[in-house]
Image (cartoon, rainbow, N blue to C red; front, side):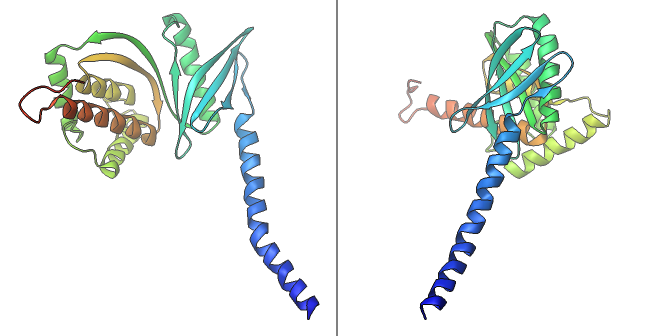
Length: 224
């Protein structure tokens, strides 16, 4: 009797703990692989894991090493923020290198930098809103995630085929102009419909939240 109970306990242990151990091994392998550097003739880079969402990208070119803030999202997507201190000359080499490295790591990516705020003229903002409306992006309405993603996929396909007048960086520049009176973010590179859709959705939510804050309950403008 005790032998039967022992066998049953062993079977339960195997069926319960076995899959958990396997999942742990897979997780460790993926984590190690994701932190391995990718090397190229003129540079190398790797993703350094941080907290729950915050990561960093260690970029090494020659004898110079620098870390860039990064945020990893779902479906192997990542946003990378470059510092404002980088010159145009430095950006011209760093941005394409990061793009090549992230593609090798099989990431969808969005690379951007924050810059000194530039006031957007009303006519440019109106034109941006109109151009976005033509492709089905309405900044004044709650974004439909599935519809927005399908729009991004269509743009991605036409762009990769060389048939598109509208690229992802151009599209995201229009979104910035349409949703902020001052443009302080510049999208430098973007790959992947998922990354671009998530960025657009977040900017629209931010814009609509600002509109709600500026509306009144009693006819007076509420403080921001």
